[in-house]
Length: 386
Image 1 (spheres, rainbow, N blue to C red):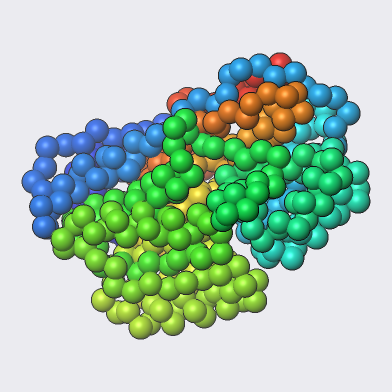
Image 2: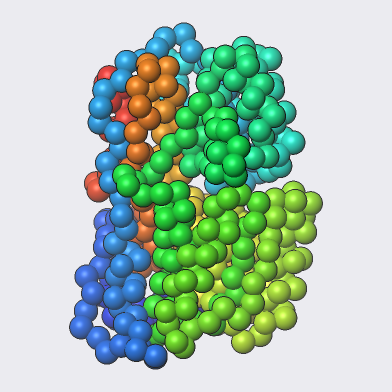
């Protein structure tokens, strides 16, 4: 656990100091205190308060009629990673709640797997196929085949093929916040990571940036991080490391990360784009390095196992989180609206920074942001489910 910056932060923002208190108030947003700007003129407390506040809105409230006797086929980006498996399970949960049949196909973290799953859904006679966080370009062929078969395809948080000069192939893609473009949303994720790292390091973050080049959101998220770091004269990106799905699937992830950690002894901050990678061995590598006390480590996406790492301070100190289950419900909501001939509406999904002292859910509970936004109840109400 990165104890010294966390101690400074607790004094600055007046947040809860123990997990026991957090269990009583699972979602708290600290009030910034009057402080002196840190190194280089950076106001660390203001950065932290902004990161903790978040920007969530309500899910769609417009009613939609439930089409009956529907088989939903959900393509998980990769069941080995909790940030793929959790929203996939939520999509099944939501579909089951409205009486649909639902199946998950494991895309195994690679385009071939995603395409195979789409084709399996077509062969199985699915009525709708959903994907979360998978862009059109690497699966253009299978998406075209689904269209030819008359099966709607829904991309949650995805880029369609028209962004690369082609024709759109998804039947619909979801957006998160009203009047917020895909790039703007993901840039904010990276910027929030940077704000937290700069804030907890008193304005002087020296960062190892991990970049995920495979999906469209990876480079955009990295750009948001870089732009925010550049605003603080005593902070910098010391080194950048690319990690791909192939690295994760082949087992090369931990070795590549450990080598980068060894090659950069002067860093005090690490930004990781996928919390699932921490759970896949990166957190253990940080602990094994003997430098965990000196490193502020922030991930992204959020998950119950990752919140456990943060609470314990074992290789992870924070994350930029949103309830990934929300995406699963958004997949079903978009499917319902497409089948009913309605417009697909923004999901309301925002982000906020979570660390051991701020916004951490009570142990054993999902990251639902209640009572700020009860997304499950809101979706079920729009679907007419008691």
